[in-house]
Length: 220
Image (tube, rainbow, N blue to C red):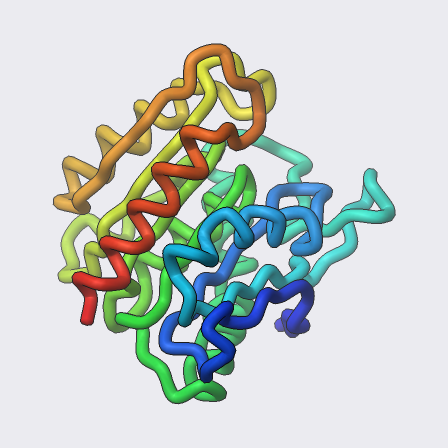
């Protein structure tokens, strides 16, 4: 199993020891240094939160400067399910390490993903032994949930945000994820940003901030 290194981070604005951790999982061909740019928009509302944006453990074959959680050689449902499953142990180990390091629990943790990182956040977040406070997914999709069908699994609140003009991950992925999560009993809120491509806009940032504040407060 590949080990995830610390990567980009933003310390609590309060200057105190972290009371919450927000882990941001970047998209394919990107890095934590890109996604940590979301954190300054949320710091004022979460002054005691530590923001961590680690790089995925694999270098991206087609983009030497970027990283991947797994190789996106195929985009069918079985390949995506296998990919998230193969990358999940490294993410889970990183989460466990950080919670232990700061003496925090899953209730103090929120996961945020973008694109391929959203796939990871949803896969890992729904399979923790204890529920994280919440999961925010931008421009991503939900991969296989077959093994969750007939078991009692954690159901943290989920926010999904997607651009209607996304040329990379079709907006239908949000609608499919929403339908499946609701069927499984996972509380999910969604937002479509009209005309937005594969990106995060100001409305998405605001929704993410408000969701994280409420989720982290209610989980305690």
